[in-house]
Length: 394
Image (cartoon, rainbow, N blue to C red; front, side, top):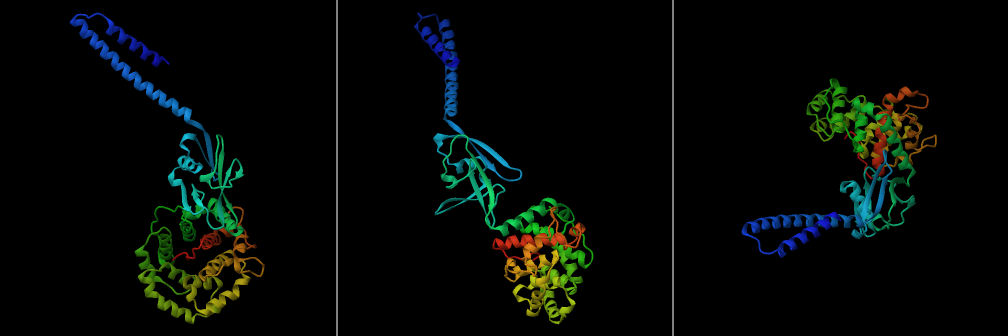
């Protein structure tokens, strides 16, 4: 209001000056200068007045505020004021509140489908639940009506109990157990995390000496998406066919290398002569993971004979991966206890996230190979449920 009054006063002065009798030339120069100064001030005030009007119109156009809540850990909460005249949809407002890269959508004949929001990324057996004011939304977010004060909540919900159980087990291990195994560069845990596309260490310094050390170097580097030529060369020179478990694991580690091609014939020849009564179940399962459908029938037969009696976490984990390698659903394999392979494995998980060796073993058994192999098997199982049957290590 003060600025509007100033505009009027300056205008009156201009008119008054113009109405005066003709002054002397010095007076005219002074008057011209005065008039120019006043005119500049008028222009400045008019510009400021226009800006104030625009700002006031903007404030008057805001109709209300909506809030978006992502039910994650920790939760993400964003509130956004909206302009009713812009006719934005709740989806538009969600994207504005979170950012383009945080809301992934696809279009179909049924409308716009939200694939993921922030860290809420549905996999097989789950979907994004959208609620408005604690009531499930009956239409797509792009078509939903909204008013001032509405709260939209997004959460991950499961319709498949098996998928939910696997995901819960994986998250429990990651939250409570994974860190120490990562610090130790445990290749099973690192491989499982790579299957999940979870963050991994930035780098690894080769440490191995001897056959076991070189093998670890290769497997850790593979999990990190790297190649260690020197470790491969050293491992090839020290490669051993026995025990069969280590030999099959080593062949998987060498896959897609010249070393693999140099060793495969001797490896297969060894399989033809190995006496099955001298190898354990884990040897058989790892061999199947390596050769898949090309596994010699006698090895598959020996494997299938032992599966129903499995009672320890490492063997159950390997059996799950072997079934997937054979294009079989692990949930279709039922043990003598009546449990499926995945259920039997997850029954051995403790509330702290680790996996007991078996029911007779104490908590210390989780720090051995029980937990890493069990975690790896569950990541492979989740990938299988999502249509990916790729074996680890390869």
